[in-house]
Length: 272
Image 1: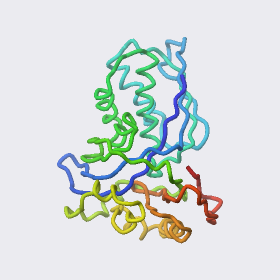
Image 2: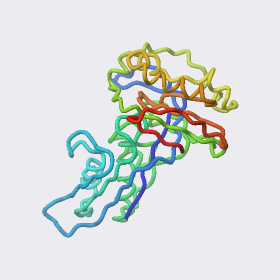
Image 3: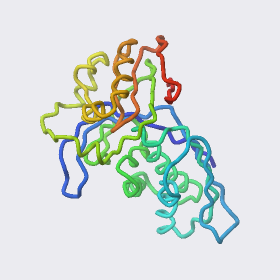
C-alpha cells in the first residue's frame, strides 16, 4: 500500500511561554501543502527481520533507528503484536530540517498506513496520542487539515482557511537551522494578538500583522534567508514568511501570477 505524506507551512508562529517539561508553548496556524513524499509498505515473509528499510530521493541524515517511520513501526508493534514484518520504501521529496514538517508527516502517515494495512481499527484520537510520542508536529498530520495549533503544537482546532485561489512558492536554501538554538534565541512575550482574528483578515493584511518569532534571530544569523523573503515581496507576493524555525520560506501569490524570480541553482524551490 502506498501513501503520500505531505508537507505543511506555518502561517504565523508565536512562542508564548516556556513549559516545566522543557518544551515551549506556541501558537501557529498549520496549513497542509501539496509537496509530498512517497511511503510504501509491503508485508514481508521474513520473520527474522521486523523492518527492511529502503530510501530514495533526497538524502536523510541520521541513524535508521531515529527515523520516525521506523519509530512509528516499533511504537505500534509494542501494543499490537499482530503487526508482522514489513518492507518499507520511503522516497523523499520534502527537504529535511526545512521547517516543512517532512519527517513528522512521514511518521504520522506511517501510523495511519500500519493502521490500515493491519486493520488495527485505531481511532483518530488514539492515533494522535501515538503521534505525539513521535514529535510535537506529528499529531497535525493525523488530522491534516488547516488547524490553529497551541500547546506544544499538539492542541489542534480545525479552521476554515482555503488558499485554492492562490499559488504558493516554497524555497529552501539548504541551510539547517538548529531548532534548539532557534528556541534559545527567543525572548518569550505574552502580548501576542489573536492569531485567529488576523488569519480571518484579507491576505494582503497579513504582511503587517502576522509574524514568525523565529525570523529575527534566524535572519540575523543567515541573511540569505531574509533575502529570499524580501525577493518574494519584491516580486509581488501578497504574504511571505519563513516556515517553522526555517530555513524554508514561502510566498503566497495570486493564482494567475507566476513571476520570474531568480533562484540560486543550489536552492530547492517549488510552485504549489
